[in-house]
Image (cartoon, rainbow, N blue to C red):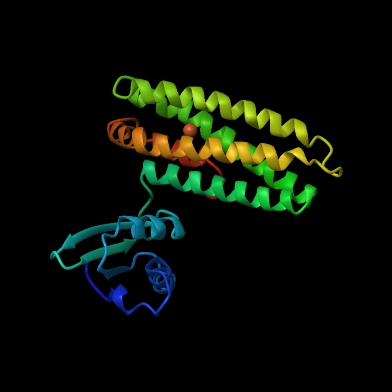
Length: 229
Ligand SMILES: [Fe+2]
Ligand SMILES: [Fe+2]
């Protein structure tokens, strides 16, 4: 990584969180650019927040001198495709965002828009689950037997919840007051499920995908929600 400008988080305006300050600078940079960040604090949380804001396009490495942390951070360019795990994390984030929008619309009683948003979430989540069950679970069937079995059970529960959500708003022009409740339950399930999956399976899938069919990643990208590909 050729380098670069250094952003010192100690210079953040008073009261502004470090992640907000860093993002306000990074959003002005373009794909393919590299920057360094000096952080007085251990940066794991900061980088998780930035990765979320920048849709998993970041690659970084960190060194410390005992006084602080120097992070060299690169924003993937157009020719630098996301690896499998980041592709899946981005899809998780996109579905979470859809769920938040659905909840906000339902809470505001904007049923028609809420149902449209829920339809999109339903399609994205079913496609995501199918890919994980059919294409990815076999990659780590031996190395991660227990997490894989748990993932499949949670997928079954989530699909039951999606079926229930479809049922509550069959007539989108009428108020469907149970929608918020069901979406809240789905949000709780997804939150735990995504966290477990990312922690216990994504690494195994990423390693196995390295030796798998080179077309696998293209297939995953093609079948996930359009925002990912
Ligand atoms: Fe899953
Ligand atoms: Fe997933």
